[in-house]
Length: 189
Length: 189
Image 1: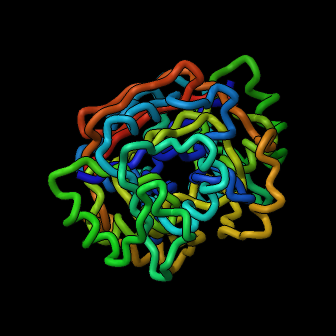
Image 2 (image 1 turned 30 degrees about the vertical axis):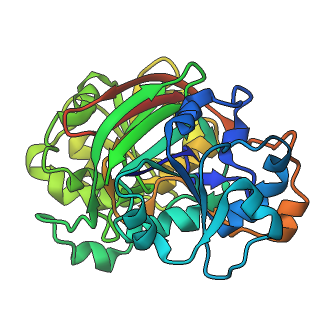
């Protein structure tokens, strides 16, 4: 079982343009807030290489994943030399391989966006948890990999009004709101 | 008081790539469903020119806005000749002028994305109601006008970790879920 619990601005960004997590838009965000305490219950932590390289210096003095193996998805090992001291290892097999390895355990996929997209594409996310923050950031790294289009009279004239093709349907599993107006939505993709 | 009640896919699209509303992704969508019955309570209906031109042929045989003035935001009047028969008129003054005109009444802004963006920019939306549909469309017209960025080591190195600038904060006014997993979120921008 692989789950995420990522923040997203109302306009779709999971980080600011400089890479800072969208969480940091909320003055009310802190350790364990907004459901991030659920990370304590998981068996393993997964993240992408960029998130790892970005987060390590921040985490190293008070390691937040104590007692849990951390798998870093990467196609360019090795990780830094001291990674093993924190039970961090490189996972080169990609989302499907990691999902298989964690089949009977609870893996928490931290991010970032590219890694979540790769897991979604591989059908390797069991619970897509997103926390919609009551902010618009206007710029940043989008959570989802999409292709925006503009209105076109030609496309509209050719539209199939009866049975549009929906690439992905999800099931809403649960939801809750936080006092600051953040809304957690958990989907089964 | 100007309010919206628009659908948005989980990945941010308010229409399919061919212009069909995201609502149509839901087999459960129909007249009055998903809170669209609240349109009956408004005093006036607002929409952009593209939405009007696109919707007219669909609406004309069973006009859904009977008894309500319809204002079409446009910089290129006139509208079609028979528009006046349905109490439809061109509003050339832009979002601020329309908001002023409707100050003591309840205006429902139907869309589309460009018009909602223009109203947001003008600070002319009092209640931003969006219904998050449990689908990913991957392509389409985004509700919000944004600028996606990619991760950059240089930007991250220069990031202000203490006080990120948040362009727009909103207040969550209400929320509800529908049986098919759609979630209505109403914000005061």
